[in-house]
Length: 277
Image 1 (spheres, rainbow, N blue to C red):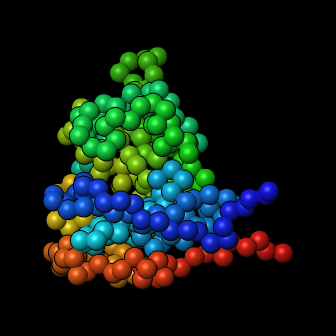
Image 2 (cartoon, helix red, strand yellow):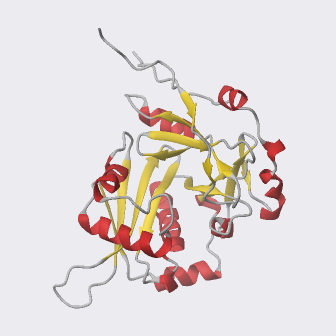
Image 3 (cartoon, rainbow, N blue to C red):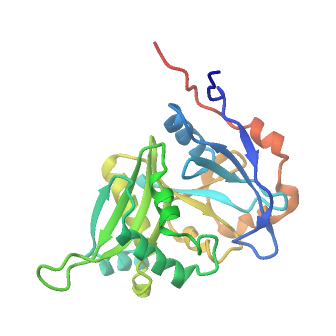
């Protein structure tokens, strides 16, 4: 018997887990598989509706107690770095960028482990081994790149050490920063901020209007840095809108702000993945 994929994506909800951003809350995700010939179209369409990619899955927070996770993106044409961000660019102007196919290396994994052990030792990725890391990098059915940053060599003939890495999806309307990590010993160089600033520049040169940053969470210190970027939009109430005053979004942590799952799914716009001709 021949089996085929369903014509329309099927959506599912994960079981509640402790929220990594807001203490005492539970996290739940709405997700669908990313596979088949229509994967790129689906990734583009759902990314514009607040979804994020993790390997071959697209997901969006759909928690029962709050709607605090708001997808965020930078409007490239309107962005200007502030004074602190200009200092960050100057501090890291020695870094050299290369973009490659999504292929994991032992050098990347070594940097990844040092980053986790220093910054997220108790996080959900803390026990990830090299095979799981390779899956995170390589299992992508869409157009993705691994963007590596290397610092200047300490002496002639010595390879440049790997300083930072970002797994990036190339969308129709922008760059989506799927996951990034960097040298934890360069704590004063604001490498996380630098990677975002450099992706804005990559998008600008490529003529892409947006850089997608993942989720901004009002009330979370861990995610608060995203609100420091100018020209920031958030996906709220089914539309993209300028963030304005971050304090104005504190009501999103209230349980009455959450719509039922069925209503959320019904409002998702799906791309036409039928072949033309």
